[in-house]
Length: 220
Image (cartoon, rainbow, N blue to C red):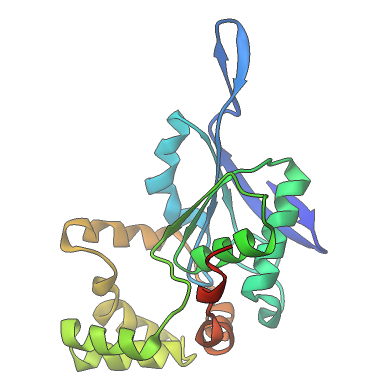
């Protein structure tokens, strides 16, 4: 399904009913709004892990601007603030009242911006593998200690904006194993369900992530 917000079309999908029948009455279920990471991926890789929650809640999966099945846009418009504003407008457009927002990775950065810039709009906030600030120097050093110098070099290349086929192949081979505990490494296969918009990923890596720091606002 698609909806027009802020001059662009966003794609979303819904798993699970919005109401349960209880003692002859319709009782609304909780609503979970899932925001994917990447940046540049789409919602599909989240489906295997989050769709089972539809037994308890209605789960709404959204492809953020320019990503997945949403309308293509200029990558320069894909800032965390803009994507958070899109999500707020999306909730208004389809009538989501205070959903539980689950943001993974870069989607967690969007979710945090949503909570800070649109207070009172969320019923809850879950950040998965997200942070209020990314310290690249520390992350690269930690990666080198755990997975070697070649893995560090591959990560530095991608986060510097090189998302060409060879760089991505090297990254997935050397760095991707660091994203999962050995007992949950099978979850990395879910990434194959999603496509990647390398232009958006490169722009966010180079222009947005280095300056992303919301630690001073966490008290809000």
